[in-house]
Amino acid sequence: MSAEGSKKAIVAALIANAGIAAAKFAGWAVTQSSSMLAEGVHSVADTSNQALLLLGQKRAKQDADELHPFGYGRARYFYSFIVALVLFTLGSMFALYEGYEKIAHAHDHQLSSPQIAIAILLIGIALEGYSFRTAFKESTPLKGEASWWHFIRNSRNPELPIVLLEDTGALIGLLLALAGVSLSWATGNGIWDGIGTLGIGVLLGIIAIVLIIEMKSLLIGEGATKEEERAIVAAINAEPAVERVIHIRTQYLGPEELLVATKIAIPGTKHASTVAKTIDAAEARIRQAVPQARLIFIEPDVDRGLDAGESVDAAPAR
Image 1: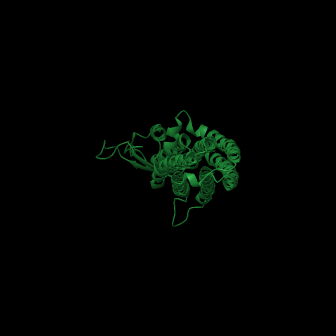
Image 2: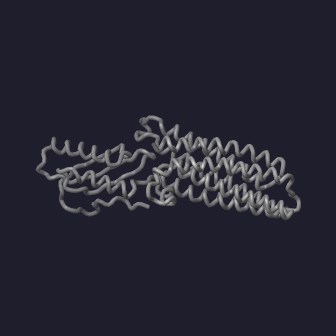
Image 3: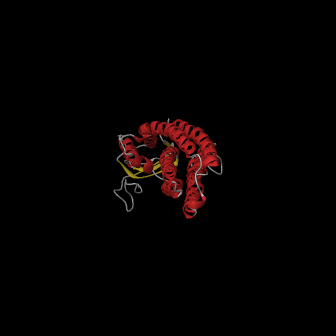
């Protein structure tokens, strides 16, 4: 459900941003507003980002091969990381530059037909609101009872947090552009348009930095959430022949593909066929408890107590 939901949110954002970008550039051509130009570049960056996210989803579906035996699931993390870089360089840096130029040479840049810019920005707010509503709707089941910040920080699905942050940034950016154009029109001073453009640049920079940090962590490799790990350990311990989980390590190979490697303690008196059946049953319980657990490696061992460095605790979660 999450893969289809994220694709739906991406397509909605792609259509909205492509239309908004064309309208903003048309508005800039008429009004010469730097806020409109910055927002146009912002929308081009967002449109490119959605295309990259769709490309990442397509590449992630490639079958595993000799060079990549665990498949290409992390392609979605790689392209999401590229998206964050594009948003920072093409969106934020350009807007900061344009804002500086506008403020430094405010007397050389006067708005013409600001009403057109305001009308285009209002249309843009409506279209971005539609895109945001789609991303919000698709993300809500995955978020559960957690806060939205917790969802962005801990989601192993890279696309939905990106679209949510992009759409949030786009809506705030449109409001900043609207304020800049409106104040410049009302006061006759183009510096307000430049201040609005700077605000857009700072906003995009903050969003991009958050995304870069999150996507880097996913690209390096994140383990199961604390809730998922507890569910996995409980599923293993539910097997009567399992004395305890000695240690467990997990890692997401892709948004819907979790690798689980664990060592379990089984009494030494158990017959080999019983051990094999126990492992098979434990795997089935794990997959039922955590459907994302696709690759499971269980090593049986004789319980010798807590050995040095052996514990049921996995690597600390973020």
